[in-house]
Image (tube, rainbow, N blue to C red):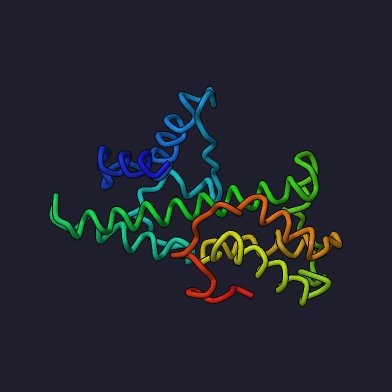
Length: 203
């Protein structure tokens, strides 16, 4: 996946190619031309209405994308072939890789706990207006910290999953079950750079 993203940035014009085109291009390559034969899944999250807009022309910036957009602009301005441009490309790639890791990890953890048929509905449940996000705030803190300990910091981007964690608590999932699911999904993830001991816990 690192090579795929890295090559895609290098081989395409970042000033002209939309975020949507970037996504579709990477999806086709990692899925082995959409067959998923010896390939891997690329997950798409976020506002689909924003995807067709050119990053550099966005008038309204989602706070979760501000850090990535900053790096993208910096990348565009740097001299071609310079070491700094390569460093920024590497940083962009690492950031997108971690985002993809967060997306897939949340999905897989939900599947392990609730089953793949029920998990999407449970994780995305929105409570009626006026009802608290979560019944047990201590549980929410525990669940978030369990995830970040095994899977790395949520970062600003991953804060969008706070409702999913709240719903896990609202379903009465025990700490041990969450710990086990996180360990199974993210046990081999090298998250040293994204460690909560560096970034701090999100809850």
